[in-house]
Length: 133
Image (cartoon, rainbow, N blue to C red; front, side, top):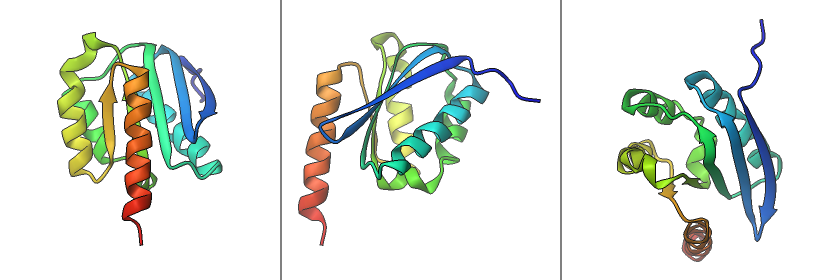
């Protein structure tokens, strides 16, 4: 019994950054599906930097759901630089999401400005290259 998606995604690659734009309604179930789609897309092109723009999406989850979703993320997300781009009104989840992700070994940052998000990914990617053996 399949359920209809409540969101839409579009993807593009911009200067080595996979940009995923999400529109529609997000629910706990659809966020898990979305995470898997992002993983599939990023993995298929061996992406190291992903920007997930959820500013146009409706609905967010609370702290407990965020915690479980982040800590249950596939190991693939431990090896890429990830940015969530959201609206300022959802800033109450920012530090919690970043802290939870960091403790789970996932390099993720939360931004409200797309240019700042891209700049962070570029800096992070550059430092990863310089720090690798």
